[in-house]
Image (tube, rainbow, N blue to C red):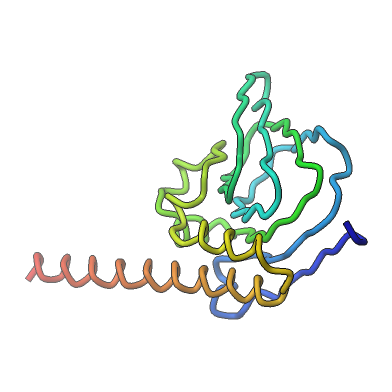
Length: 171
């Protein structure tokens, strides 16, 4: 591996109410085992490297293998992960309002959850597959922004349809 590479991306204005930060990281882990402290922010992690293993949540052993993209909700307990030999990922960090916009779940259902991302954010597995074959960091970040915009537009369309249906029932 070459020198560590961290590439932040400014969050586009149309996503800013929902996404707090975007970045790409390619680096060796600081340590093989990592204790991740509780966090009030949810993340979409598009893993482009070997699998992670979540070993524990608080005092409870979990042994969960995270092979592809995963969604980490707000965490109220610490996590213990075993990192791959090399970290390579795209990350979207969500605002409190953003989780429900981009994930097919209620934000409360994602508290203390670390789950495969594809059922929650359709299209992310295809992004990861492209990302594993590409060294175009800016292009990968563009693709992540495109996926988030697609999910945001879908959420907006669903909300508009539900509003029309509610008005139709009231009328």
